[in-house]
Image 1 (cartoon, one colour):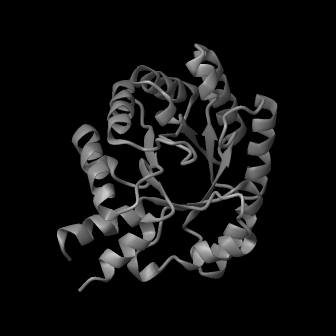
Image 2 (spheres, one colour; image 1 turned 135 degrees about the vertical axis):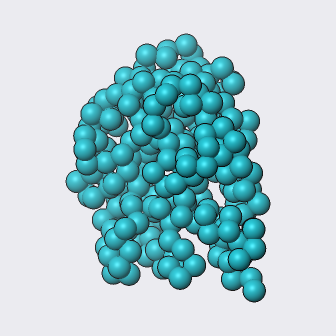
Length: 247
């Protein structure tokens, strides 16, 4: 196996294979799950809208891929929903079988100077998840200054996030290496076991390699496992499999 193929194999195991489009249907979800080729590697999770969680669970079970987690999103993508609605969304998603909840923080409130609101949304969502689901917190880094990226990451950690995630993939700037650097250093400084997810714009094995190298340089090689590092991606799987199929 070449070096780039080794990276590709690593990337697929760290991937949240994602479809979050308004046009999604049960067929979309079935096709997403059907795109997984276990001989070439399986993703850590699939990420879908809440109404499709049970469809994803069923499609994975039919292919004996129950080890693949099902993630969904809350307060997505605007970050503007009232907290009560966000918590209801969370509970419904868990009832449907969601293993992971990707919460968008109220990042516009943070920009306006309200750090406390971010903490409240994270803490309450974490309590709603209980022991049934992991909480991954989306800070929408592309909309924030460097200082606010660090602040949002810290508030997410303090609120109990299991992961801090860059982006929704629905704004102009999504995951960047610069934001990743800030977020990982903030996680490291906290001294807590918190994961990181780069989402949006990671489309090739070459892209993935840059994030993996940066994460390893800051957090160490042991950090590069599905329990602590993820890619949120829709297009990455195709390039990963193409790379692994090269003779």
